[in-house]
Image (cartoon, rainbow, N blue to C red; front, side, top):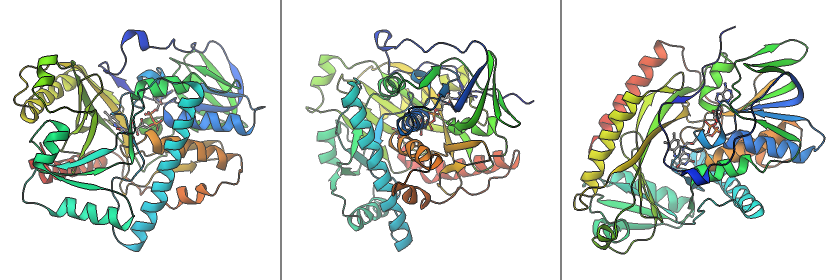
Length: 437
Ligand SMILES: Cc1cc2nc3c(=O)[nH]c(=O)nc-3n(C[C@H](O)[C@H](O)[C@H](O)COP(=O)(O)OP(=O)(O)OC[C@H]3O[C@@H](n4cnc5c(N)ncnc54)[C@H](O)[C@@H]3O)c2cc1C
């Protein structure tokens, strides 16, 4: 048996300080049986396990996690809980898909909001909206097209030029931006670790328990270093790393992207900026450009740079190189702030598909999955996980049709062709977006 590689980010993320860490779930010890095994406790895994358990409280559900929810990519992200697709399009088919996608995202946002209220999860949930910004001057086409698509979808938005943006963001770096109110900002690590600790009683959770592979017979057997779990069904909530456990998944590639968090600004540095509320900004080119946030406790988050990470591994040297890149970029955006140190730089994995469609549904007699997040997963993987549970237990839910309307991910060739393809498209995007950094 070829053992699955698990995500290994040789860095620490900046979202949790010591006192916020929740105690990990126990590690598996010995063999078990279950009706369902959920592998992975990111947004897809916890949403799936919760919904399954709610539909049938008699089910014996086991959720295993290679690390902890507080260390997953779900914890390592930038904390934009989007209620609106990044890419819309203008043809009838594109608009129909974008409308279905928006309905799904808003359902994900609403599920999360209800849960944080019900369980009092402290995660700095803020209805802050989002700025979608462009650096390059003179190329109006990208944002104009985005604005026209928002109008077609009847979405409220506001266009801001450089000086108006400065008053909101404290920088003259961006030439133009579009503000849309439909986005929540959170501390993602507090959100996902909170959710993973308030699951219904018939979900037993084991942390630091990697799935090494699945053996198939009359039942499935999930192999871990500490015991084997015999089960009727498996949910692969491992997103980018799913092909490690089920090598037949040949339509998504694992990539890594990086974020840094600065130390909080001093009172003097704050005084040099316009009076600002916390904000979140996405770039017009997600590969070359930077996602930015300013938090309520006066820190900046920068998410920028994407690399292939086919087996989910990112080492210290890669992290260090990106830290230097982020530091340089930050100085360019806020040249007058003086020294602002990066407290942490970290990475996380995402799954990318060729046509942007998710990898969602039943993969074989035993295994289901909700993957192929394409870089956005807080609201999306939440709704994808909960709808998959409905589908697996034959529950009638109108949103399943919306999920299916997003289409199926296209075939991707194996390595080394895949590596060449990824390198080529990253180069292309970095070239197209070269003026955005
Ligand atoms: C830096 C960064 C910024 C991002 N910003 C945003 C953002 O602002 N908004 C947004 O919506 N999305 C964002 N994303 C994307 C988002 O984080 C992902 O889409 C989301 O985490 C996917 O959720 P998931 O549950 O499908 O998978 P994951 O969060 O990847 O969870 C999968 C889990 O499976 C576990 N696992 C893997 N292999 C095994 C195994 N063999 N055995 C047991 N467990 C295993 C992993 O440890 C992990 O905990 C960002 C991602 C990164 C990296």
